Amino acid sequence: MARKNYSEEFRRQAVDLYESTPGATVRGIAEDLGIVRGTLRGWLDAYGTGKKTAPDGTRTSSPLRSTTTRSSGVPAGPTVPAGETPEQKIARLEAENAALRVETTKLATEREILQKAAKYFGRGDALVSRFQFVADHCNTFEVKRLCELVEIERSSYYAWKASAPARAQRAAADAALQARIRRVHAADNTLGAPRVTAELNDGVPDGERVNHKRIARVMRAAGIAGYVKKRKVRTTIPEPTDQVVPDLLQRDFTAKAPNQRYVGDITYLPISAAAGGGNLYLATVIDCYSRRLVGWAVADHMRTELVTDALNAAAATRGSLAGAVFHSDHGSVYTSKAYADLCAALGVRQSMGAVGTSADNALAESFNATLKREVLQDAACWPDEATCRREVFRWILRYNNRRRHSWCGYTSPVDYEKNTTTTTLATAA
Image 1 (cartoon, helix red, strand yellow):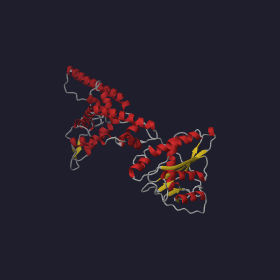
Image 2 (cartoon, rainbow, N blue to C red):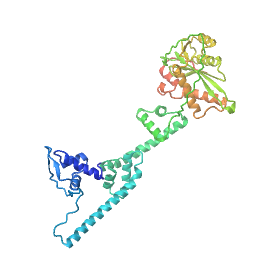
Image 3 (cartoon, rainbow, N blue to C red):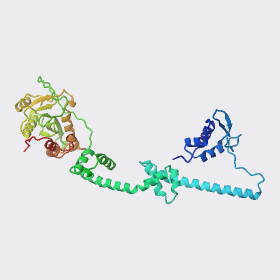
Image 4 (cartoon, one colour):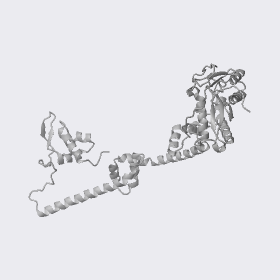
């Protein structure tokens, strides 16, 4: 939409553009400026020199005669007819006065409209705010005038107004979807848009499934998000050893079938000082195929028994670990002779990443971070050991059996194994 209020400098530049452009026409220059021809003609009358540039570059008289006072450059006043009688003069002045009153009323109305519109322009969607302003004031002012002042097309406004029922229907549908999202999120506030999408679409026919982008948009608008906590903790304690263990994974945390490749680590579980302080420790054994936690152990120490208990639990879950690879860091318990003897007895091949490089055991590190983020959330520690054991156990069961994992196509690790394999695996009692 063209502007309606132009500065005097802009008008003079427009006139100069017409007069200095070889072969310029009023129509062409007006189109370039985005104004109507009559507006440009008025500016030429007010500010023009009466000259223009011909196509050959020479200056010639303009067919549009200027009423500008040549000496001062100030627009001349109305022409006074020769031999005007006093009665004619009075009539002319009254007509001019009436025109000025009309113009004053117009300017006052425009000022009032713009004052009312100011509070609408600070909103998020400027275009929608302008449409809404016109709709809110169309009974007080003329729609044409409103649209001109806020610089929107009347056709666009009427199209927006005609689509109001459809927008209301979409808003109602989004409100209903938001209620469904809140129910899912209330049950587990760690869920982000991808897992909420998987939860809502689980078992739903294709025609009734909700697009993940729409769910993300509704969650964002409602301020709903999965829990995110940024905290970096280093827990590995390397132990010098003469035992040389190769890195059999080389950061490839995938497997073609269950019970082939495992990763594990130890993470600390902080306890409140009011309950004596200190830490519990969790040792894990995670299957690279499904991300299932097949073995774990919790204790108040970091002795070798912690990791041997976790590996024995994994063997009990799978029935046998013969031929499987277990990958860990260079923590002292993993490099101990007792642990090496257990791996040999179970038929497990040991694998270790580089010393002090967490990326070489990223899958296990990620699991530990997820557990603490989703269980502790904003808390710094557990109130006591009993609560810690109970909550960690509850979360592990949910992780294996119910929590939707992106690696598993947003199914749980246990369901992923059931859906993608035909091998019957022993389950923990």
